[in-house]
Image (cartoon, rainbow over all chains, first blue to last red):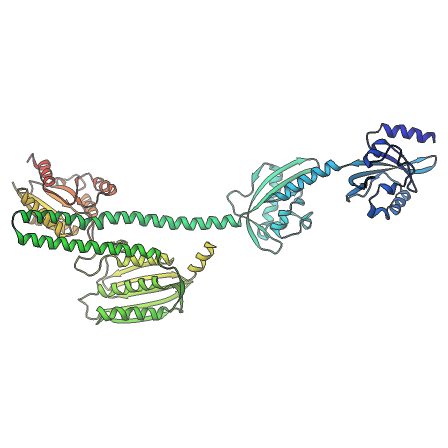
Length: 492
Length: 142
């Protein structure tokens, strides 16, 4: 017992909560730090069973574990890899770390038990854990060999894994197959360079989910040099939404650019095409004034007549401009249109008025229906066909108009071919601008038709081209079959 | 001294107005009209037809050139003149070119004056005082 007294003094001097326990679980000695930790009075634990300090649910199993220890007594930590708790007198469970050291006293095997209060450490860890899990981005820590050491909850959600499932796996399991080999090379070179930076600047990065689907990501890298090796912390952001938004914005920007361009064209057109008749009118009215002052009533009447014609022309142009402007706000209902029928119907309506004597033929080689905005397609057909009629060549005995269609590589093509007067090459650009007429003023038309065609074609995502020579003119309309779908995808 | 006044304009009314105002202002001028830029170019490129239809130099012809015309625009006429007479040849001296447009657009004026030989930019409708000023300005020495 003298030895025990020595132990008592030594235990009391030690800053760690300690106790000495016998093979059958009796507490032979405890220091006051241990008593404090478990909420007992000094000496109150003496001769009590050590199981008193073990949580209720494992109290029954503890004696077996204790016996196992005494069979092969070695210094070790208790319950490696498990969270241990001690039961205080008041029932509170406190997280602890326990060290076991076998000693012998007078030939009797005993164990010296050191108990570390790890409440603060656990609280700190929980705080970090909460912070990691609260982050909206996925946070992954890998070791020197690219094995995943730690992930937050968001990582599991983003990549479709249970969080624990990822621990110990190579980081490459989150990288799409086709980049894996390169990725491991990049990773090694990063592990040597070690600097805070974004991954893959200028490249599009992708992550792969457990189910094999991919998504665009942005990744930040931070090297961690500390206790336990050289880790790398990667922060992963799923940028699917952002990419879609970017695409939508690009789409809108292109649209805005087009509208802006149209607006400046409109301003130009207003200063030329609207102001011109007005200026002429002002001039001719001033002359009429002179004529009236001079008593030349006949000249005055003629000039007033000219002024009225100009006013009518101006009104017509304003009407045309409004028609053109209205084209932008046409109902955008996409529907299946039987183009064969539409072409024939449009021709018949035009034919009643002024196409008599023109041989009309069709060569339909496409698959109906065509998904499009019907009113726009009709405007295009009406204008192309009526142009073919209006600009027929009076010198040719057999005026013809032919509509040919085809489908090629997801594109619907419709050509209107005539043997009319033709359009000189230098005007091929200009004819699609509003009020830009290339024929003399006595030919029918107001310079609006092809501008309307162009505008509607653009709205349908298509293109219009012209070829012309002495034999006649071909206007070719091409419409992408998938335009509506692609547009919808971009908008979603 | 009769001044050859050339109006290149597709708008018949505008040509008529110039003709009337020349008369009203009492200017001794011979008004020659072209309803299209290419027709005008054809004539001035052909020395003989120019002499017959417009008159021989001196005095230089006063050209009122519209911008917005079908087929070729006033600017394209300027381009053709620039190419044809651009080497500083004496032919450029036989013309006083004034743009003649309803457009007050800065871009239009800028483009017009980018051709060094364009002397003025007249905004329609033209009036007697403007016509008078032009004639005084460009012909007082003659």
